[in-house]
Image (cartoon, rainbow, N blue to C red):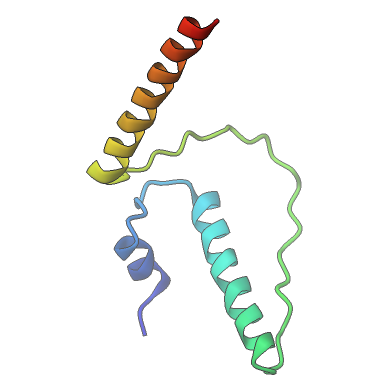
Length: 92
């Protein structure tokens, strides 16, 4: 069985990335697995998270490399928006 660190690395998480994002991802995986077990009729243990005092959190900008296909789709969408704006100006 792979360690959580190995899984995170394979999924593209940076080692120096936000621990909060990593934790949220792992918690989501656990909940999804529990829901799957519940649907199969297996007993499910609830997740108990440690209560921590609220800390000042700095918002973090996430970035994703979505690849050339997505970039082409974004470019096409921008072209459609420009076309629509031109058509609106002509008809108005």
